[in-house]
Image 1 (tube, one colour):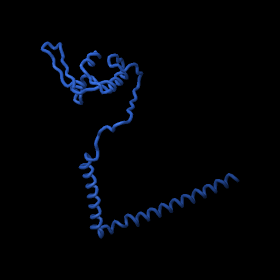
Image 2 (cartoon, rainbow, N blue to C red; image 1 turned 120 degrees about the vertical axis):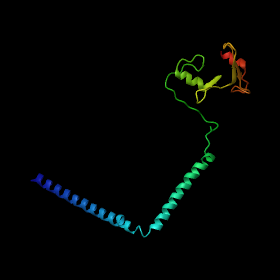
Image 3 (cartoon, rainbow, N blue to C red; image 1 turned 90 degrees about the vertical axis):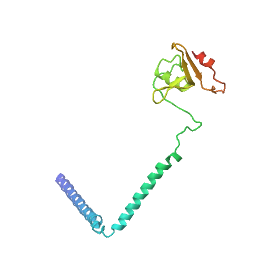
Image 4 (cartoon, rainbow, N blue to C red; image 1 turned 30 degrees about the horizontal axis):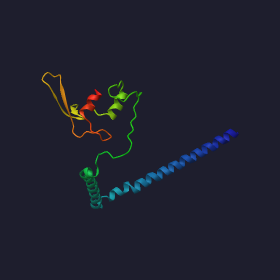
Length: 169
């Protein structure tokens, strides 16, 4: 008896909830029909007003986009900011920073961050000078003469000479 009474109460509440949801759904449909679709018929009367606002909106978007494109170079400059700290994470074990004794990719990355080489590769994979300005090769292809860039200095301000480069080799 008690179970049957609880079941009847549950059904009654469930049906009442269903009727409330149906009533809310009907009110929503009526409101959408009245306030949204019902106004499309009056759109022809205010056509000039709507078109003028749409044109103004398109013009505003066009001005903002053109201003961004044309003045982007004036406001945006890609350059390093002086000062600060550079942090780089590398997966692996670091053993030495000496470029002559590197044995793994981690050591290579660290030595490239710390030391400049005579030559490096540019974006087109062409050999260009890093601290070398140019080089010449003799007729036999056995002697290379490398000229350093002028006014190269160490971190402490001392001049970098050809003897310093020879010392590393």
